[in-house]
View 1 (tube, rainbow, N blue to C red):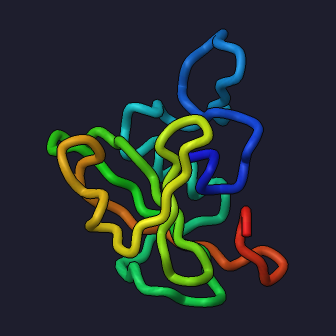
View 2 (view 1 turned 30 degrees about the horizontal axis):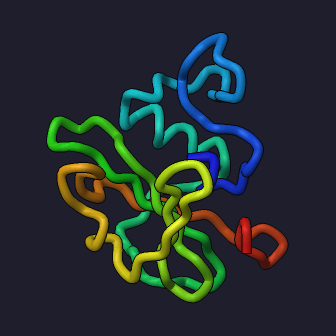
Length: 124
């Protein structure tokens, strides 16, 4: 989630008293889709059904397991390609959201977008 909104200093997850992890105050648990959606809403994202490239917007996609537990987030780059952080120092690109769907990441359950800040996308 941090990677998606442009925070390269912190790992975001709802754990208390663990150095290096961050979770915004007042946001529901990181174990819920509601919490992940709220996290992006406080960073100016709103829901959309369109995964296509819109140059004036940056988009994120939330993946969840079959039981609805959020598992992963991908961020769309200005080229239309999606990028994902797969661990510390492991950043990948994938042409479609569906290419990451499966047992590990689940399936895409929510797409969100926000206007590019200052005409630029985060981390590009």
